[in-house]
Image (tube, rainbow, N blue to C red):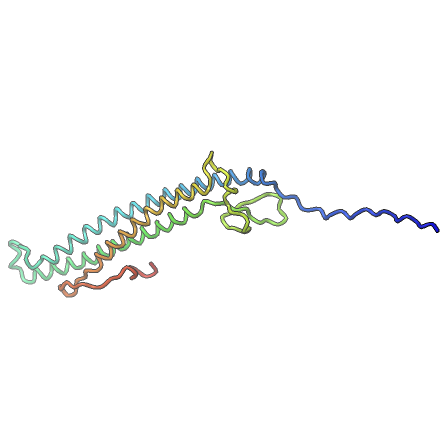
Length: 222
């Protein structure tokens, strides 16, 4: 008895996958975006650094004025007023005027410190914004990039590839963060000095010490 041969069947075609850029193509698209971003972030670092230094200069000027006013007020009882010494209440009036100036300089010093903190936050932000991540764009054939990580497998550094000659994103990040760390250390020192200034207060002409700890806020929301 003859058996009919089985009719051969063609295996089903696999579903056509949507084309995705090859790694080399993705890198070519990523590099100019990364280069532009690195330039921008270093520009932000330079601008914030200049503003921070300007705030430091203002703070130094206000601190000097505050110290001089405080010393003048403290030494008022022994100050030789010359021909003005016989005027009624002259020392009290001078003391009140110095107290107002001291309060004014304290506020100006605190304002300069706030500006230093603000510019330092910009420095830190720029130093952590060097990377560029591929952006998920459904139904779009053009590859786009952003500063947000949509894909956990995308490190945003081009896989360690050089972005400028032989310098990678990681090296630029390390350099920027080392640069910013100098300002962070300097800011801590200036905060310590500010705590010293504000730890001495004047209450009705009598100097007394207050206890300000490192963890205390110098202003609301510091």
